[in-house]
Length: 196
Image (tube, rainbow, N blue to C red; front, side, top):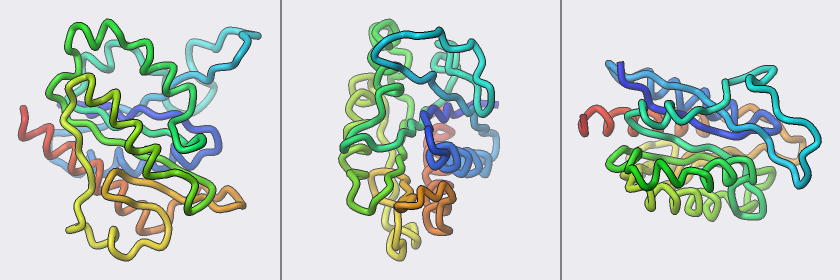
């Protein structure tokens, strides 16, 4: 069964919850399944090496996950209109995969979460697409035929799924945000199946 890699970094839990909704959408497509993975945190100075397996949540991503996937969906919290450093650090170290064409022709999509409505969701989503384009991925968004894209009062954009956690940092997506995350997962899985 082909896997779609759902690779994310989450600190407060919002992005991890969106990742699970994306994974549910992938699982709604016959013959497709989601492979949830995360990246370890990074710091300006190394104090202790990260454990090889996180204490909770998804396992850390391995090179084989990229080789074996039929598509990839990246998720990150927004940091000043851009992806968080741990995900960027991982992507910056994919030179061998870029040179060998590991992701060429595979569908890819992105998702994010912010504390505020105008916290930079769209710029984060767009900037996350740039390395995927360099890797030769086929970028997948959310069309306005998804009804929730027209009614959401929180996150959700044509560039990818998103969540507004608010000043109380509520990690639970709204019904519309969850629906759009599942729709994004479904679209990536459907396109991956068609490309196969």
